[in-house]
Length: 384
Image 1 (tube, one colour):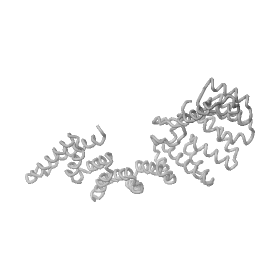
Image 2 (spheres, one colour; image 1 turned 90 degrees about the vertical axis):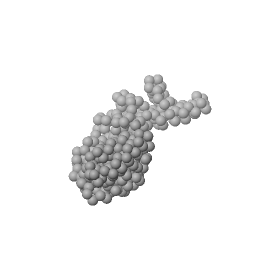
Image 3 (tube, helix red, strand yellow; image 1 turned 180 degrees about the horizontal axis):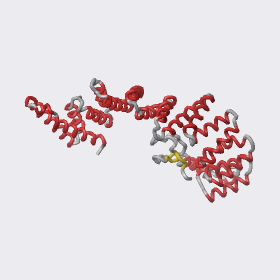
Image 4 (cartoon, one colour; image 1 turned 60 degrees about the vertical axis):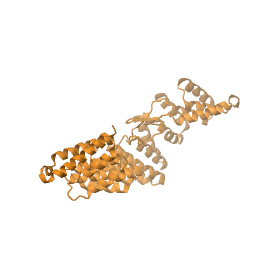
């Protein structure tokens, strides 16, 4: 049974319960009205049993008037419309509720929350934002409203406002708020680095690491900023801490390692790659080492290492490198090799390298905000 049909059944049961307890129907003068109500209710049930949900909803909507006993039923009907995609009707139901002057604080809060959800479904983000702000004023806690606002601002990429909401949740000790807060600060820092606002970037990243000391993304961005501002010593300290505490992200450390070590000694970069490959062998480290050998004309080392890789841990990337590497010897190449190169590259773009630890979403590139379950920092490197 679909969820909206299940909700409709619950609404019908609730209306029947009201019918049974409505005191005015016990008065003799109201007997005829009560009989008409019962007939229409039975007709609505028949429509429901016949799977004619549209007519059932129409009758049940007409049957109930807005009063203190039927607020929750109206909210359920509005939710039913929204779940069926009839957002305009849901908005009308919930707007009608909010227009009532006799709502309690709790009832008004419920109606605002549902109307805000209607607006989100309709894409009216500015109206939804306004209602969530009103919910915060009505609710001493405001956790739900802040969380929904945070999701809204993330969708809009309004990172300044997102940081405000994440900070509020963090101060309320909301679970996982430290991760959300630090990741939103990283978004601001990333934009600041790109625009040259180094002061804002550093302030945001320092705060991100203060909130979540294990935030790999913040540390990587701070390394990037330190390299940009020629603070090599500071970048190196952070880099060493990352490789020590979070070696599973070694693939993301290759580029900063290249920038840090090559600025000092070309041999230092090679030794770093060799050392890390021995400790944490991976395709990315192997390719980085192969590229380094080839770039520095250490052809024999490249050939030996490539042979080992293709025999011990073959991969599409290693084969693709082999094809490019062998181009220097035209006698060993043919049109078949070119076709194979294209084929291998197409497979490489689909390779799973990161998996969400929460929902299992798979990706070939790191995504700090999982597109599926919307959890921050949940993408972990796949074992390859």
